[in-house]
Image 1 (cartoon, rainbow, N blue to C red):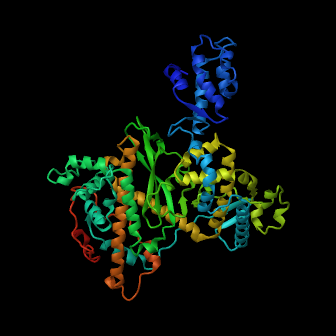
Image 2: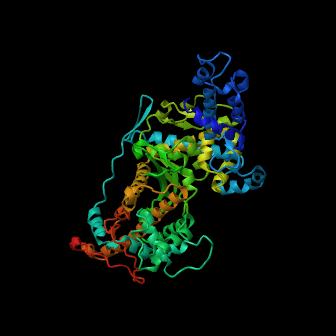
Length: 637
């Protein structure tokens, strides 16, 4: 209450300047906000000044507003009432029951959905793209059949599954131990790593550009096709400066026209922008598919999404406090780089998230903002990044959401009763369903009628997300009103529970599926470790306070990581071929796919990120650098 004097001067502008809009639920709050100047202007505000808004004063606020012992019983505590309404306004803004008309961040996400008049025309095409029908009943019956088959199959195999048990109405799953390395792995892995040529980071970027043309994807913001002959040198210098977080001073060279500070600043403003960086990164993703060994790493259909935390020591609207990740002090604030990594170990895109907000609110936004043209089908993430709504949103958009569940003991499993589609309930299902011990887990029914009721809006949301007209973050917050789901949110949650159950049953039954999730998440962690090595300047902290600057710098880091991954992939492939041709005594046979799949392109011991930065285009033609002799003393190199 002691901050009332600070807040009071802004109440008039808050009520009259901001163009407030609301849903039916938030209309009373908007009216109360607009009436605040009348309350603050009253000499002795009483109950008549807040008539019609008494329902907004709830909980402990009622005692503070109406029961102040220092005031006459007919009067209200003005500061307490003001802060009560402001708290209600803030909560309504977060769930978007109240919004600022025309605003970006605090605007109405419903307004960004495909308009009703266009939806009538576009509905059929959206349904076709998503592979869905206007009437979901047949689709839901098919899903119910899949759930039934999954329960039956998993229940039949429980006795032979030593890692899973059902006791006392609880499902228990043992910890998955690390898979043993393939036989002969070390005899291949160590020579391959030792054969990779030593190289300076700038030369790696220039060689990668020479082979892929990645910098050619960075167009001038004016659209001009004219380019300097030495533009690639300038762009390589900027990539080093921003991805290593060292600034322009260590990179700029007065004697080189392409690397003067003036030239670098001009190129950064004209070419080094988010769209160009994303296009260059996408070029690397596409070109990596032509390197033979990457086929053993994956098919590009699986990707993981994970956050990398950065301290932001400067003032910024896009940083939030978190003592766990950013420490304590005068300004312990930071941001999260939510990045997507494919099973081919290439970064597919990234998203800047203020602070450490739950990743699950942003994962779908990250997937819909990928740099690569080919999108994955299976999305993995850590256990803290899922909810039933997220499962539903991913499913209706055509993705299989596969988060890692560290402990499924208390996880609720569901089943789909198709009799609900006819207005009935199946009785005594446990006696005939053949699900064995799963019937002791307290399985709950998915509300299929709720899905049918909101199906058209659900498909409309999916179409709006696919066309980037609305952020999934805003929609999820809108569908969760103070922890209580709205009708549409409940429909998405019930739809997601079907896919969550299918996912968990697959985790229980198929060990390879469980290992695939863990292996993909390990790739993301290893890539973050490499990112820390590259982003070493300024103690690894983000020094830019504005959002676009942060995004461009993290985009440069992502581009640098993809360039390293592409270059390492190329030379690992060459090293494996040389070993198969007879080096190190390996003759007459191909290295097994199991060993090839374990060779990672995220090594960096052979790459120099520090000290003097030489920028020389390598003159290699169509050939590669000479591989090192793995038997030689590497310290002499």
